[in-house]
Length: 177
Image 1 (tube, rainbow, N blue to C red):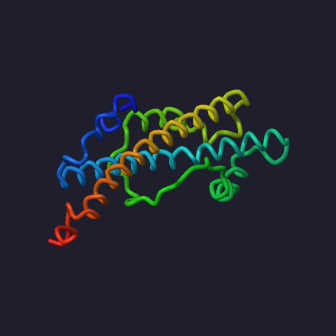
Image 2: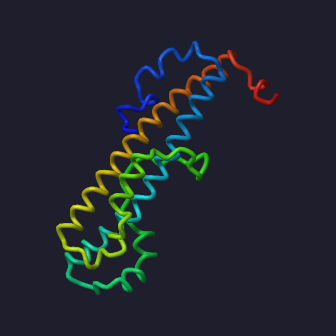
C-alpha cells in the first residue's frame, strides 16, 4: 500500500490521544511497530543488491579488477560488510522477524532484483547498471522516509503512554497483573 493511502500515516491517526484508552494506545503503537519492522526488513533487503551494483560501477570506473562472477562472489563478504549506508538514526528493532511486509513494496523490489540481474552485474551494460542503481537508491530512500514517518507515530504514542505513567493517570502496577 503506498504511503499516501496508508491509514496509519493519515494525520488524523494521532488526533485526540489523551482520550484514548491505554489498550488502544498500546495496540496503535504495536501496529506501527509491526509495520516499521517490515519496512526495516525491506530496507535491509535492498541494501545488499545496492552495495553489489555500486561495487561493480566503481570497479568499472577505475578500470581494475576482473569482471567475472567468481571474483564477485569472492568479494561478497567485503562488499556486504563495508557497503555504503545512508546516514540517519537507526533504531534497535524490537523484533527481527517482520510480521507485516508491504506487498506492493516487496513486489517492486522483487521486480528490480528478482530476475537475477544482481548476480549477473558483471555482464550488464553500464546504462542498465546505472539505471538499476538509481532505482534501488530511490526505493531505499522512499522506504527510509516511510520508516521515519512511523518512528514519529511510535514516538508520539510512546510519549502519551509515558505521560500517563508519569502523571499517575496510569499505573505501572496494572502492567504487572
